[in-house]
Length: 221
Figure 1 (cartoon, rainbow, N blue to C red):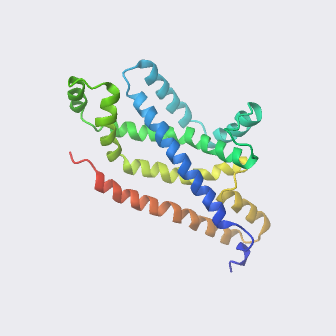
Figure 2: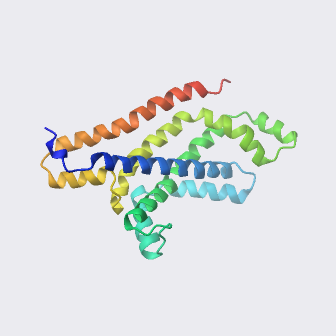
Figure 3: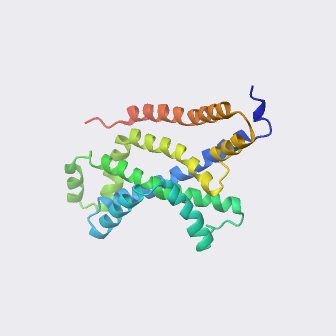
């Protein structure tokens, strides 16, 4: 029944999807945390930048950002992110685009977590002489992260599925291979079922594990 899979690097395609997800998740977590910090910053310019960034990026389709990363950054501005091979260039540009897009959602999830931290804790820390950065790093963010594990897991699952858009610029991840197989094989339903199962294998355990983590680290108030 599954003879049509012979000759196709199915595991390799899903491995590229995993790599896209991991690198993009790490970048999004870092940049999204910085954006969340800027959004609650006492500096108006930083708050304005973070607010504008989140509002603009969340309302731009991911496909537009992905295509711009290839046509705009690479082909027009010749930005290759240190890669020389065309395959590596597209991969890195896809990661950059996914980070730019996903970090806006990470920022909003973290901001909601920051809002759950009692204001009195921050005020007490400032009264002790801690700077805003120290209060954010030592008191607010640790509690915020513990309260938003579930929302962040939803963002991660969405990111895993959003990696399929990278096929628009030739990144050989799972959906790119799926498209090629559908064009070459007369097994539309079976091919779709195989790739759907592959994404379920990637996303379902993630949701279950992070759901368990969320219960373990939840802040008791």
